[in-house]
Image (tube, rainbow over all chains, first blue to last red; front, side, top):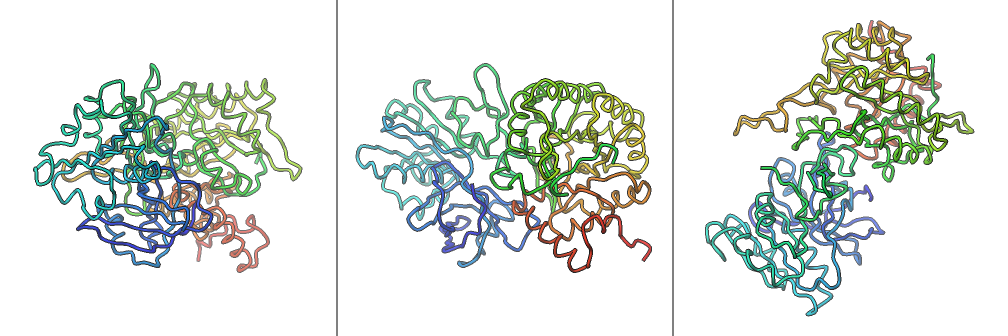
Length: 260
Length: 316
């Protein structure tokens, strides 16, 4: 874990309200695993606002860069669109656990929506070197076609099944309806997105398939010190409030007790 | 101070903001600051409140964590030996549902100290206290039922401090609530009941409403406000307390986010400082404040920090 000034080398609006930020980090970059996240100071002039957590979309150890896919959801994430290349943003990273993965999990399903696509796309990129031995399939959903940003998704070669609630692209309905019944074709399922989506997936998924969810929660410290970002997780017979930033953000999907 | 301790530095990490002293250790070298005040420890484990537990406000942070903690048995068996072995100076923040429960936490920790050599406090070659240095009674948590009662009812406050005092000869600090018109009677009450020092203060009561749903932005209708937003109001309590009770040591806590605010708390009368939300804003806060304090002493031609404590020129 490091707290360092990161330099913005590119900040591109992929579509209205969707951005791609590429940061250059001081050497040497620690190992970064898909599913981990960073805490970023979105406005370097605002010393009185907390950093914001973002999933890491990609990391390149060769040139010490990492990228973040973000949406303008609040004051600070909207401010990010205005940050020019060359700006230094304080960055605390890498945080949290990553997605577990085993070499015999060759048929991989990614089920996601919204900014939840970011850690799933990082995992897909991470598995690319395995070539045809690895079969990655994406099931990505949104309310409407613009939510599934082509400028982001077209950068990846693996097969992608899309779902939109209004039917403007792909399957008309939820991504979980699209995925339902497909799990027998996969060795593992990874999911990230709105809680309602992950809860629905939890309900339809057959028990035999390993499944992992990356959760999102409001955070303050990002390192497990404040206990602000807990999720209810079943551990054996009991349910515990575990910290999304430290023990998570990745948990076994079936262990997560989603709120109603 | 009757039961004084010597720390490396006047900067401490505040309870509730640094976990159990280990979470920030990779970022903030435990040998670089005065010590940590642990997250609250209660007699039994507590699950805390549901989420959302956090809501940011202008220059502030509302929280309703709700004292989630593993309980004193797990704390004493698993966490205390590790903190002691690391050479961390730490103060245990104790909490309970009743004055007796506060005392139970102190008594149990004392029992473990007496029986487990791995938890024995030490004195370093430089004369610094390491390991367990004392207790902070969390009399003022706003996020549990009746949590602030212990610091806003003088009878309950006095009994809680008295019972805690009976269980230990070590440093005993009363963490007071800022949600009072005048903090002086409560500070006096804590001192007369046996507290060696007071922490001024805990979070302020606060509310944040989602105007679309007209519901709270947190899991509870109200929560505790920290951060720069409460700095001036906390400083007021520190100043008032120090003017009225100049011999009572004060641990200042509330919105310290830079050297300037740290100096203000010292001038107002604090003898030690606690960093909380400021660490979330800036994990480099400890060395930045230390450098700023040194620069301030040089610029003011003062020999050390003791020389500036309580030197606020409030008469002009």
